[in-house]
Structure formats: structure tokens, C-alpha cells
Image: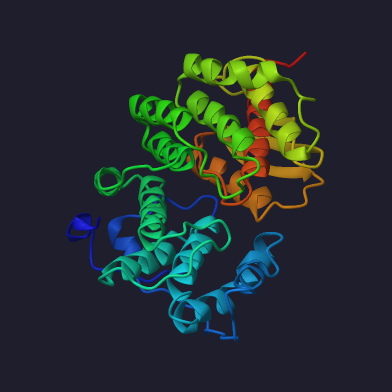
Length: 355
């Protein structure tokens, strides 16, 4: 799968976390040395690997605190678990927007030859090593795309064939970051025609169309969003009682009827926005200065599984001055609700107002 790596660059090392106002990273930035954590190793078996990977995984600070242990496990776990932890720690860095660290770890992962031993089925990761390689390739393309390194990201995507609807959705999200609406449409159509494949096998039927609707709208494909959402919305908010369904339905309904288009001209001031999340309304406060977003933060929430999305997503929107940002892994609903709440505030910043 990896002929594209000749195309990338000798690799990197991260430094400081990306700040809200920092520029996109260049290939040279991705190659700069990184300050890695001192690796902490603990005995781990197949049975408790999931618990180790998710220890403390509550908010951005807690996620960051798991890095020394995850980094140690990526180097010292039993051979058939090590590939999982290598991709897991890279994914964690990517979710914290420490893109150089994620890129460096992924390059090292792909440098290893052969079909390595791998104990699959942990934390929703693929059952096979080839599936894990596809997941790592999607992660690499995502990191490159959100830094505007288009040709390299497309080269990675060219070596990937989505097997499940979830993988096709992730590819659509990457093309959204690249600004390629036609490719977004193609892969969302693929996603709707493939088996689920979402790590949470019980709720991919809710998460995938909800996020697909949001990706289509962010890519300027409103008719596709409406077509995707028709059956989902028609099923009704109370069709299933669990919060996964209701939260996904609420976000999809808000995305399909946001109260107006995202305005091109923003009026300076402070604006509030909200959207139902996983466990209750998420409220945000948006500040506009000089016609641009100068600040965005979550002001109220009751989420139980944000995995850093409450701080990471506002930072991404601020950095890119756009709602076309990728979701935090494992926090699809919270990420999408923050994006929808920010859209609500942006519409108000353009002079619009929801009923």
C-alpha cells in the first residue's frame, strides 16, 4: 500500500502544540525534531489493552496525560499488540493537533516491512494488520490535508480503497479539508452503499449519516446533504431511545435547517450559539473582530465523552476560519455538536437568527 512514501519526506519531530493562531505546518515543519514524552511501560495483556488505552481519556488535559504510557506501549507492548499502540498514539497526537508528532510516528509505522503480527479488535480498530494499515493511511492523509499539503495527501488517498462505509466517510472528510467537493460527493455516495464499519458497531447507522450530512454541507453540497438526511430525519427523533440516536438526529436536523447560509460578511461583536450534544445542549460564544473569528469557546455543556472535542474543535475552527474541520476520534457527536453550535453563532454574526 505504501509506494507513496517515496513522495513524502524524511521525517520529523514535533515541538510545541499548534496554537489557535499558528499557521499551517509545512513539510519542513513536519520534519523538525519533536520533544517526545519519557516512555512509561506497564504490563499489558489483550484483555486490558482497551482499559490502558482509555485511562483518563476525559478531556484534552487527560488525553495528553495518557501520552507517556501510550508512547511506552507503542515501543514495549507484546509484539501482537504493538502495531495497535503505534497507531493509537499517533491518532492521539493528531487529535491534539500535534501534527508533526503524529506524522513522524506514522512514517515510522509504515517503514516497517511485512505483515506484522497484530492482535485486532481492540478499541474498535480493524481485525487485520492490513485494516490497521488502512486506518493509519487515513490518519496520515488527514494530517497532511488539514495543513494544506494537498499533493501528498492525495497521493496517500490514491493508495487507499475504502472497505466500509466508515472508511469512505473518513475519506470524504479528508477531501472536505482539501476543498474538493466533487470527491466529497463521490465518497459520501460510496459510504451510503457500504457496510457500516463504524468502531461503535451499534451506532454507526446514526453517526455515519449525521456526520455525512455535516461534511456535505461544509463542502457546499447542500442537495447531497438533504438527500442523505431525508430518510434519517423522516425516521424521527424518538425512533430509538438511546442518546446516540437522539443526539445524532438533533445535530442532523440542525445542520439541514440551520436558519440560513453561513454568511460571507460577519458583523463585529459577540454572539451565542447552541446545539444539542450527546448529553444536553452545547453552548458556544463567538467573537468577531475585523470581520473574522477572533475567539470561540464552549460556555456550557454536559458531555460525558468529549475526548478533547470541547477545546480542540473551537481551536480548529478559529485556526482555519471555517466550519470545514475534522472531528475528534471517538467524539463524533460532541465534535459535530460544537461545529453546529458554531454555525448557529456565525449565522447570527451575519445578521440572521434562528426562530
